[in-house]
Image 1: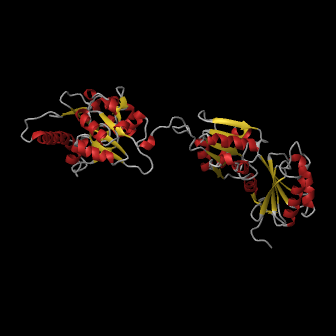
Image 2: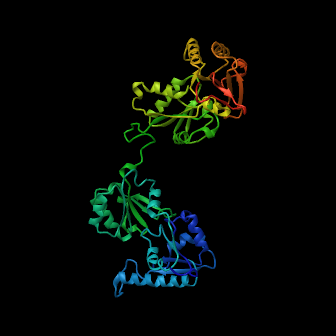
Image 3: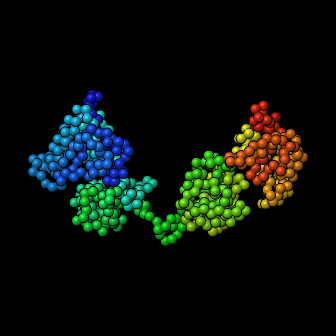
Length: 501
C-alpha cells in the first residue's frame, strides 16, 4: 500500500440506469472526486457518465477509457483477449498517475462494481497499491425484477445468475435445474439464450427486460422479442413459478380463498405506547379492521384498509363478520382494548369459530396490557400477590353469579380487580358489590380507582372500601380492592406484599 500522499481509488456503482437510483454515498463521492473515470465503446458515448451527470461538477478531470474492441474481431497479436488486457493495463497506468499525484479517482460502474462490471479490472491492477473503497450499487437484476413487478425467489429457493455468452447446452442445463435465473449479456447472444430457455422447457415463463429503470425501459415475454431489436443492456429473467401474481388479493386462480386469517389484537388500555410491537405489526398488515367504533378510532388511519365499526353489544355478529371476511381470503384484525382475552373479543371470536363453516379459518390471539395492570402500575403493586378479576356486568351472566363470586373471592382474601363497575343501565351494581365485600372486608381496606388510564382524562384515586363513593365511578374505570395485606407506604405507594403471613 502506498503512503498517505497518494490519492484514493473508488469503484462506485451507479445502479441500473435511473440517476435517482444512485446511492447517496455514490453521489457524494462523485461530486467530491478529483478525477472521474468511465468506460465507453469506440463511439465514445458512456452510459455510466450519463447516469452520473447530475452529480458531476466543473473542474473535475474526466478520464474516458475507450475499449479498443467490444464484440468485433481484432488484428492484435494476442487476439481479442490480448487487446483487452493491453487496454486494461494502459487504463490502469493512466489512473495510477493521478493516484500517485495525490488525486482521488472515482471509477464509474453501471450496476454494481463487482457484478460483471469493468471496474473490477482496474481493481485487480490497482487495489493492492493504493487505498481503495468499493461502493455497491443496485444491480441490473434487481432493477429488472422491479421493472416487471415480480419477486425472483422466495423462502429457500435458488437464484442462478448466468452470462449469455455460455454455450446453449450449458445454459439449458443450468436453467433446467434452478428455481429462478437471470441471464445477462444478451445483445448478440439473444438467439442462444432463447434456444437454451426453450430446450430447458421454461421459455413460456421467461421475461425480457431492456434498459431497466430508464426512460427507454421495455419489458415483455421473452418469447415475443424480435432478436434484431435486442441491445447489450438487456437481460432475461426466469422468476420462480411460486412468485406468479394471483388474480386478486386473497384468491387463487380458480377463485378459491386462501391465506385469510383473523388476528384478535389488544391495543392496551389507552396510551399508544402501551400497544405492543407485535400488535402494531398485525394491525399494519391487516386488510380489514373489525371492532367497537371507539376502539377502531385509536388505530391510525390507513386508506389501504377497510374499517368495520359496530356497537359494543354485538360481539357474536362482529366475530362472524370477521370470520366471513377471513374465509374470503382477507387478513382481518379484530380490535379490542386492553387484552383481547380479558372480557373482550378473543373468546367471542373463538366461540363463533367453532361453527363448521369456519373450520378452516385460522385465528390468532395477541396479548395486550390490561386495564388492571395499568391502574396497578400507576400506584405501585397492589396486584403483587394473588388476585382475581371480576366483571360486574350482568349482561352475560346473572347478577347472583357475580355476587357469589365476589363473596368467595373476598373470603379467600384475594385482591380484586373489578371491570365494568357501573353503567347508566345498571348504576346500582357497584354499590351492591361494595356491600357484599364489606360483609367480609374491613372498611379500611385499600381501594384504587383508575379512570381512563393512559388516556387524556386519566385520574387515579386511592381510598378505602368504606369511603368509596360509587357515584364517582363509571364504565371507564377499573376498581382494585385490596386484600387484608394490601397497604399504603409512607411514600404513598400501594402494594400487596409478596410474603403472606
